[in-house]
Image (cartoon, rainbow over all chains, first blue to last red; front, top):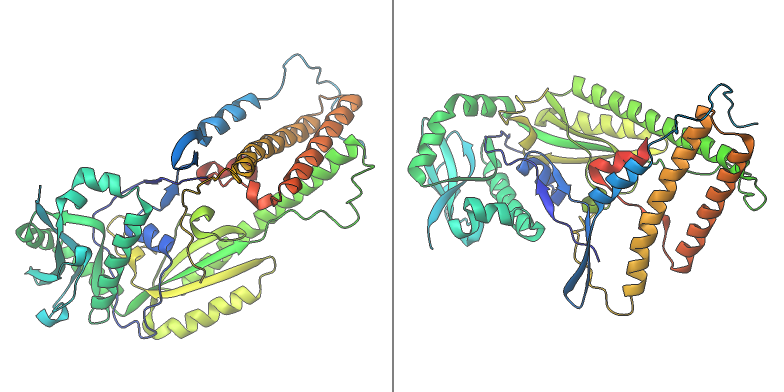
Length: 91
Length: 257
Length: 95
């Protein structure tokens, strides 16, 4: 149900360096590690979910926008509440 | 449009022609060499339809395409890397033609030579640390059916605090391990933690370290990592390598350390 | 070294569409629940709530947690299934 698009943060085109004789043999590198190194700035998955049925994209949920608005709603404190009696949870 | 360009994989000092005889790279096209300024670049022809600026922007967002290109690029770097010290380029360095590639070698001659010297006889090793921060309710606190609302909040507060403490401890441990390994290696870097959706890993990745280790000292290094990992509780170390030191000679990183 | 899983578009067929939608909804509900709980604890620590308020708040959140857990189990979803990895926004729930 979810797809991922990748935003590449940077596409540097400068040389890197390496050594020779990795006598232990070439170990297969995980794709993510390769991407981090060859793209130069890490791979970021954008937080979107696309719901599709029978190959038809129907709903796209932009999680970033959703989270941001939820976060804004959580802003605390009504300034009129009386604060003279601090108390924590009764133990 | 069938415009073509030269894709650059890496630079090395000297390479003989037969290092690339019969070897193919991207798009199944043969590798070739471009020599200038005492350096040798390994290149192959790519189509601008696929690797031109607009096409690239599109293709780089396609994980399937990206995987194919990255794997091929890495294969070439590793193959040549077994023969001599190489300075790999990052993905998608594309020059209009081989003359421009030659110019590139000349422009970056000093930095490339420095890079090659720095990483001569060394490889990159990756050490990742995963911490288990899953919240475990304390024994005997599971009687939630008869719990009052106030007690519930108190319990959640304690659990949350415990989780925060565990996260803090894990961070401190990760920093310590990175410091220890950094002091014993030619160079080191911390890379950002990786997205779980890409790696499928369990636990929190609190360290994604890259270390430049002289091949002659690799045994010592791996033993040390094993030892450090053995001392951890609620966390584990994941060692990988040896790899070409991609992280260690880019001009941006200044060679790490 | 584990195989890297590549994210894919997972086709919902008509049988699993209910479960997939449910998972999405529950994931968001769980996110909001965690934020609310965090906020409630913060408010209690600030000391500007009366005992009755704390009790009411705690009870409501406790019931919500229980409800989400039951719904999750009903659809055979693990806590990890609801775990939104928000990437850079992951810090939201981690602090």
